[in-house]
Image 1 (tube, one colour):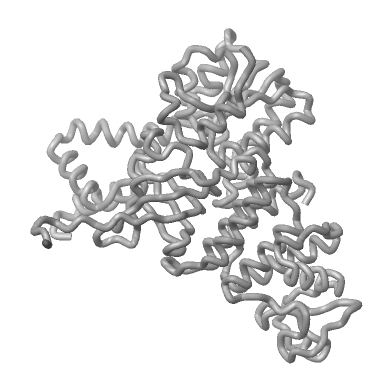
Image 2 (spheres, chains in turn brown, red):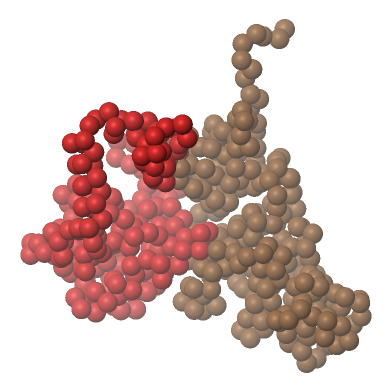
Length: 263
Length: 198
């Protein structure tokens, strides 16, 4: 029988990765979660800072949690009731390079998806990358493979094995034009149509990126040489910046501390 | 707004403060109006005074109206031990313990990979300049035990250890009077990882 009192919102059970946590007011927090069930959502964690018993350290970025939440009337934001840690990825917090890479990967994932649209492939990829960072030191090749995988999951995969404009072959030697606006590498005939400022890549760097794209995160075992690593990093940064319309904050952080980390 | 212009102006200014919405700003404005001219004068004087008189200590970068600040000027404080904190409230919290007899350095923030806050936005360069001028034996990093605080501690460690200075980190884990049963997994795991021999 339907009751007459105010309706009680349904309790939601979510498997959620904490992407970001921002302090709000005296003691609350607003967290951005990438959930299996509802995609990217924001959730309000009342008294998260005042009571260590309520959420403890579970709302720190990179933590995978089982969350209980409810819809809030008149708001897109969920109300977070409780969380239990499924995987803390604690080793990431003990290494500056791992923190920087995990922060960058989390921000990229956050910016590539819209709210409330489930992205199981991207969530799985981010968890795989955070798992790798939890188990071993950060490697540039793995971060490039994550970027390529995240772009693929978001429907923005750059074309690296052929010309993005005509489909023709790209040179196996010398230099290749990489145009984010046209979606990837260009053959010599299409290169003059590239947008002004589109970067040039050595054929070696283009081939390395194509290999990483084909092999995925699990196949990103081989290290990139420093020169090819820098080219690949800058080309993907330009591609991501073109499609997002801005440079990611975490990219700026990586650029600033990179020399200290040997990147 | 259907109120006198001076009230509307005050509400608008108060609503620019962090955490203050339109309704709270209105409530505060009417409270100030009701409290009378003496209180309004004291409040205005206090606001003007804090902006006019408070500056950063040239030694530790804390907020002070005298340079050097009281801690840096105190000859009983050990200049060879420096406790690095994110903000002035953290300095005050440590002072309340009456346990620390060294000096401080306030970073005015923490590294934040997710917000793009890098070393150049903190008072890290000032710390290096200070260490050149007044070498220390130990730097105690007392940043918060969150991702930003850990990133800051790790960065300082990489930066300062090559200078031959000991870099230590405040302990993390179960709070005094806490209950293991109610501790969250992350805190408990950190407490176990940081266990020490008795």
